[in-house]
Length: 292
Image 1 (tube, rainbow, N blue to C red):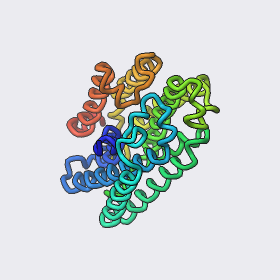
Image 2 (image 1 turned 135 degrees about the vertical axis):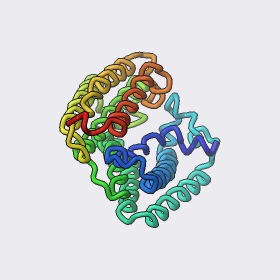
Image 3 (image 1 turned 90 degrees about the vertical axis):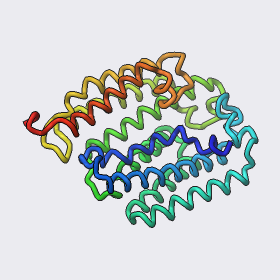
């Protein structure tokens, strides 16, 4: 039960911290990889602590949610006092460990914790501000990884991460709107302002902008390469976005988040695997002379 309250299924979001080491062509540097791994673990600790805080603040609303009512705090399986102590332990360890690791990375962790608490306390009740705060935290993970390794991260990549996060957030809001129906406003105030039309347009806009930004990044080349080798992955990225949009518009995936769709859709999982493999092969195994 303690393990479920930590929401380890959401730790995949913290993998964004590895983007700087991947796109700077330093993935095979053992020292830098170990640093990134430490940063990943710290973000996982902070994330789990914040998930518990969010559940403590939301436990009344979670009781009326058809899925979230089964969470440990909402269901009464774990007491609020025990959950609060556990949250303090995880957040304290993440703060102390980040301070010992790197001073700017420490500031990123503090900002991550602060913005997430702001979201949990007030931000989640305001239309668009809720998704912007969550998307900011996605970007912060990647930026923190860059500062930790003292590596530059492309501005195009940062903006791309932001719109990727927006896509996931707008999808989640639409799922909540459809799932909760008339109870949506009781669960979250911002859902009373959102509409299916607004969310559909937001999903289409964020997904198309994401593809454009990634295409520009691929054409221009990363800050470590002067070629456009990643341009070959643009069609794969396009197919992934189309497949994802098709899935989220299906009634079968109404209540599922991105990681749930990924593991239940064999097609999407294969496409994402091909995309990641293609990026790594093009960046690390193909000699530069082939792109001159």
